[in-house]
Length: 230
Image 1 (spheres, rainbow, N blue to C red):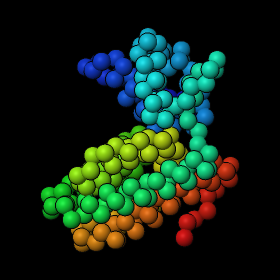
Image 2: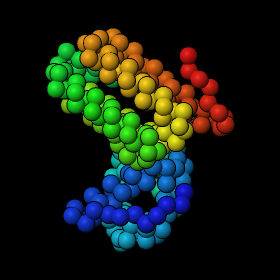
Image 3: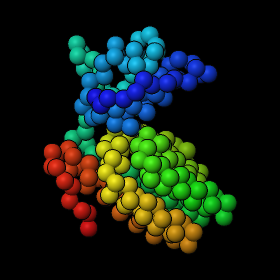
Image 4: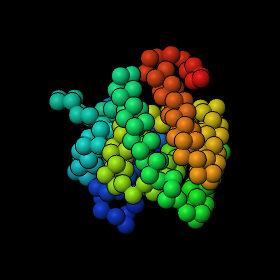
């Protein structure tokens, strides 16, 4: 668990909802890293809440696969094996290709401008090295495309798959080289979308996933420096 300043909760929403959002932010920012034990007393003090809303938030995160509960030990941030990761990315490849195929013909010029604006949000967060904001902006960019498919059940499945690897995105985005790569890959995706090139969008997403998968696989294998994906 990395050092971080006191967390600030949104007092305008129910305690569990606010704690859940802050807990998710701690996971995606890297404050809580894969394999870390979630020390409830410490987090309750950090968030300035009792343990009751924290326990409920942890149960919700467990249902999403972002934490696991071990009897007599407590909660831990989910740590994937390489085979787990490969399964998640294979499923994402199938579902994302289907979503893109349905989405591209539906996108209006206004939709395309909105997606390009979301890519600019990613770029801005990247330049500021704001990992929590970058993670959110990156998800907003991709899901603006997926949601245009008009297939809400498919999008829900994709959210579950993305949730399963959220803890690793901060690790990927922590490297400036990876952030620069993401900006370029998003530009390619936006260009293909504007051209109405469905196959090009699918291909660009595949390359985008491959670079992320390579880096995270290297992390899971304990290598110090990931190899480049061809």
